[in-house]
Image 1 (cartoon, rainbow, N blue to C red):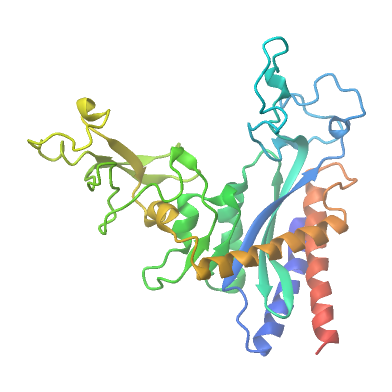
Image 2: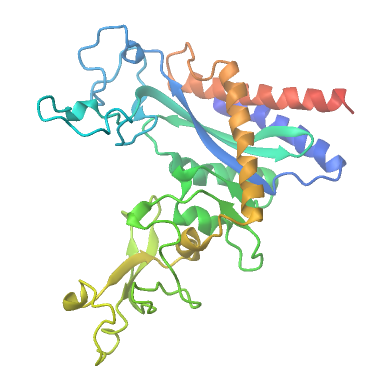
Length: 338
């Protein structure tokens, strides 16, 4: 059972936290979180093997009954050569676009802590099938992190895949204005960086520069991975009472009751847009994200990416043991340098 492996892994974390505490260091104030793809040992992942339906998620590979089909990265941008004007005599087909790398397999998510001048170690880890999104690792891993540390980290560093309102909301503190999540901005919803503004009261500002009042709230269970409260903000010249003057910029939606915005009422929804990503504090925190990349490199050297085992339970145990070994190697270096 993986609980046996977790006993070893959590004890390696306990050794490291105890060592740093003896040095007067409180590790875990800042964490990094990322995921690593793992290829299942099946012929569907072998480009040299003939498979009639290689990427059909309804046809489970016989070599591994637990793995799932997923995409490592996905985009719709053409290469520089493909981006040239399409000739009329020889048009480029849609299949020429690079849309991603598909694999049958699993994913491993890790929470990593960097201790300056000492190194980094894995604080929590989780293995799932490859069809799970990156953000699905966040809440389970943060729950484990809080159990191990006994407190919530003040800072978190992530890549752009984790730019979601609930991640910013998790690190928001009413009593600690310096705590935040260092996440690059992702243009979700069609808004560019620094394009959406808010009033001092937290109301979104329309293109005419007017704060939009809240008309009503509702519970949403479909937009995000968690249920949350969303609000509908409407044109201030239409609600709560119609104004005599028209829209100062004659917006295209003025004839249709004006502009409307639907967004979560949580402070994290505003922090996505208002976070100052150019300040030195943000840059210093975001630099610590390289710690999880170094952990992934060590795990890759131990063979985590292409394991020669054929079921999810074994792969989960192998991942836990790999991260345990990475932690123990750091602990060994600390003892040798003491």
